[in-house]
Structure formats: C-alpha cells, structure tokens
Amino acid sequence: MILVDGAGGEWPVIGHAPWNGCNLADFVMPFFLFIVGMAIPLSLKRIPDRGRAVRRVVIRTLKLLFWGILLQGRYSHAPDELTYGVDMKHVRWGGILQRIALAYLVVAVLEIVTKDAKIQDQSSSGFSIFRMYLSQWIVACCILVIYLALVYGIYVPDWEFRVRNVDSPNYGKVLTVTCGTRGILDPPCNAVGYIDRKVLGINHMYQKPAWRRHRACTDDSPHEGHFRNDAPAWCVAPFEPEGILSSLSAVLSTIIGVHYGHVLVHMKSHTDRLRQWVTMGICLLVLGIILHFSHAIPLNKQLYTFSYICVTAGAAGVVFSVLYFLVDIVSLRYVFAPLQWIGMNAMLVYVMAAEGIFEGFLNGWYYEGTNNTLVYWVRKHVFVKVWHSTRVGILLYVLFAQILFWSLVSGVLHRAGLYWKL
Image 1: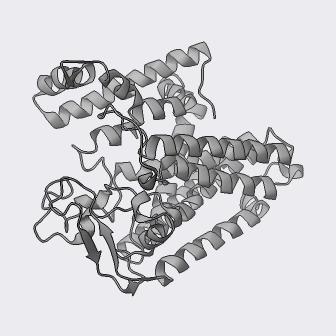
Image 2: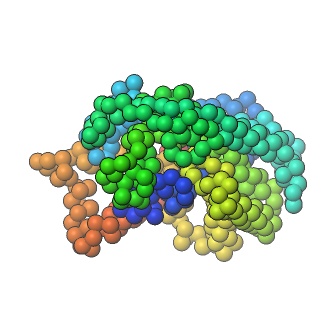
Image 3: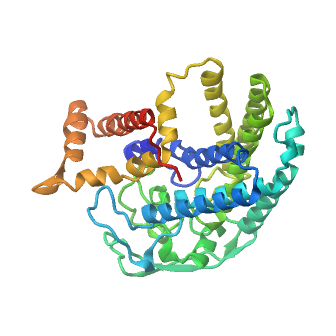
C-alpha cells in the first residue's frame, strides 16, 4: 500500500485502474481482507467463551472505525497540508479501515456463532472442512445473491451534484448526470454509487475517485491529466470506492480467508494444507478471469464485483501458499524477516507511512517555505536529481526512504517487544 500510494501517480500500472481492470494497487484491499479473515480462526480459537469473544470483536471494530474516520474522513490533511480538521457536513464515512472493520465484525461474529468447540482440534481432510463450516458458505452465498440482485436490479435515475473542486471551471455549478437505467456497471449509472449517494449523501463520498483518469475524462489516461473539453459531467463527481454495497461484497474476501485459516487449524500436514490452498486459489483465479474476459462480469475494484473477488482472493491464496512454502517448509525465515516485522506492527506502519502522518510531522519543520522541508529535499536531491528522472526517483524514494526505513523501524520495535495492537 505504501508503494502504490507513493509511486502510483508516476507509474499507472502500480496505481488503481481508472475503472475496469486490475492493477497492483487493486490487490491491496482484498489482500488485507483475506489475511484478516485467515487470522480470525487462529485468534478466536484461544477465546472459548463466546461472550468474551464478541466483546473483543466489537471493541476492535470500534477502534478500527475511529482510526479510519480520523485518518480518511478528511480530518487529517497529512502529509502535504499542515492543517487538520473537517466540516462535519463533508466528512467522509467510507475508507480502508472502515471496510476492514465491517468485514471483520461480520465474519468474526459469524465464526463465533457457527463454530463448534468440539471440532476445533479435530484433523480434517478433503471437503470435510467445507461441510464443517457449511453455514458460513450459506451466508456467503446469501451475501452474493443480495449483492448481485441489487447491482443488476436497482433502477438508477438521473442525478445531480455541485462541483466542489476549486480548480474546475465549473466550480460551484450544479451538473446533471443522465442515467434512467438499471443493471449498468459503467461509472455514472451503477447501483453501487446510487445507494451511496442516497444513504451516505454525496457530500460524504470520496471527492477524487480513480475514474478521473478514465479515457472518457482525459486524453492522458491512465495518467491523471487535464479533463477533455467534451468530458462528461460525472468525471468531476464524487464516488465512494469503499461504499455500502461494495463493502457488503468485500465481506466475501474475508470469508474466503477464514476458510484458509480453517485449513491451517484443522490440517496438520504441510502437503495437505498446500493442496487445499493452491487448488482453491487457482480455481478462483480461473473463474474470475473467465468471467472478466467473457464480458460476463468485469474486474472492478470500485464496484467490488464477483470476478474481482475471485481473482484477488485466488491471487492472495496462491501468494500466501508460496510464502508458506518458503518460510515454513524451506525455512527462509531470515530472508522474509522484514515482512514479519512490518506485519507485527502493521497498524503503526499504516498510520505513519501509508497515511503520511510521519511525513506530515517532518513537513511541519520547514525553512522559509513549506516546500523546503527535509522530506522534499531528500526526495529531490537524493533520488530524483541523482537518477535524472522523476518517475524513477519517486519509485526509489518510496522503496528506500519509506518501505525500507519502516521495515528497519519495525525490526527495532520487534526486538524491543513494542507493538501497536488494537
């Protein structure tokens, strides 16, 4: 996430796809949800009392919601602006941590309600784990049916919005988007955005969605650039990528992760675990790719489509299987130690690096002008000027001054036994 947030603007293949498609950044959220799901059976196994487990889940959910709204609700303006605060009429309710909180709450409570204490330590094989947790898969199917019914069944009427971008020539004007249709998955007229506009309110949605880089909006697509003269009105409209309906379908990524956690808990053989994980991962990948390239259901992170769930969850399963093989079987633990350090202090690294809080703190100490700070100086003179390329310089800055730096900080904290836990 640090990589895609820091270098995605210069490298479109790293940043989010403008609409349909799947770039590196589009794997971040489902990988988060997958590993959250995988950790749920492991953490709840140690808490046999259901009441205590539910209280812990609820408290952790509230903490995630608090930090999510604080960091992505427009209260924090780090790292580039040295201000803070938000007009409550325009606070953003959606966000990364908010979506993780929702998925975690739903799936963790589902795990608590459906798990049977008598089978927690039994060894299983084949499809017995599916049968053991059949009720969870029934819930997953219900969520999918509800999502598909709403996405393809809701009528989306024409809608209007007021342009809030001060750099737009239409600033302050009320523009109208023509729809009057149903079952459409294009940017302006999908049911996902319609539900968010009705429930959240258009002023509480993300103001700079990835679709601004859509080819219908700019000739520089997939890069961000000046809007075309004939760009449709929706190009400057808000859209919530972590909205209500898309977050509902995102729960499925976490449920798939829970299954991988069940395999880890119940199966004792490395071979049996890998066989289950890799088989399911490849099947999901193939299904998602077929749905996308047959034009049945496109890959779309903004809408969190079923094909997107399959491809990203399948990829997460395969990547996890590879790491499991290298770390737990081949024992290359020292090679991957920096990933362990970051993972054990993920909240700290997310807040300080991905959300730019640490850079914002450093930018607060400037000389003569706010563009003359340590962060800007290092980025410009140590990376960009040395390589005579903004693109390469920014990429190397993110890799070394952010990712490597916070890997080392996490390693020091790990040695000291200091962790930020929710």
